[in-house]
Amino acid sequence: MENTGVSKYTISFGLSLALASVANGLLVVAKEKIPAVLAGMQKLTGHHWISHCAIILGLFAFFGWLFARPHSGRGINLTVHRLLGVLVSGVVAGSLLILGFYLIGE
Amino acid sequence: MAHVLFGVACLVTAVWVFVDVLNFSETNLGRIRKLTCAAAIFMWLAFLIGGYWYVTAYHADKAIILKGPWPFAHNFFMETKEHLVLILLMLATYLPITAASNLSASRDARRVVLWVAGLVAVLALMMEGEGAIIAMGVKVGLLSR
Image 1 (cartoon, rainbow over the protein chains, first blue to last red):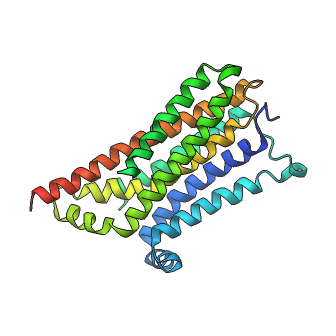
Image 2 (cartoon, rainbow over the protein chains, first blue to last red):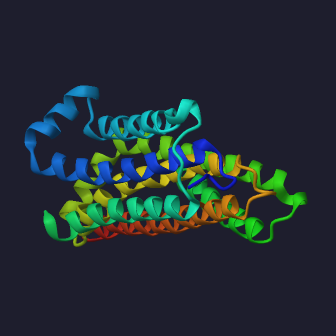
Image 3 (cartoon, chains in turn red, orange):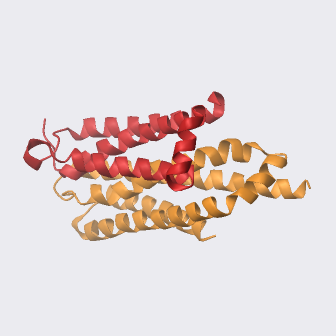
């Protein structure tokens, strides 16, 4: 497999975005279902939503950087077809988690 | 509101990027890269302004919505919007990263930009729709007093 003309950061931040999208959905469920999580996030910055944003955007930035490190800094090898599969699946899964939770889960 | 204006600007710019990449040539490469940066900047401005308003002022609107005939405007639409917007923000931030690849030489690199611009446009449109329903929730809440 090889990166067919896309930069290492396109791969690394694409994977990170998929991961952070799913984490975003899971954090919503955890926050709403476990009062201690909500209280902790409230305490962290003074508002649960600010903490939520900081955690998810921090994850996106950190994993985007981390996934560009392997192979002596050349990043993860992945075909564009695979990258798009992971990216779209992550975005759709994260969105459905949030929509589904507020539609039927709460 | 500036929040809505920048959100619409991000949506329009993402559609523009999508169309420009579909009709890619060496002559529009520079414009595509500038537009992807503009989309990200517009989205960050919309997010920061909307976020500031949400944290400091939304509680008054929330009370009106919950007492009015459209409580779902908060319980579903605001709750999902405040979290889905993070996915949109990350996608808009990712867009200029995808456009930094060698778009001239690689059809695959252009495919990534197309997909990301398309996702930004769809999610931005969804946010605009949710925002409209939330605003209507406040309006019907006030009218029913």
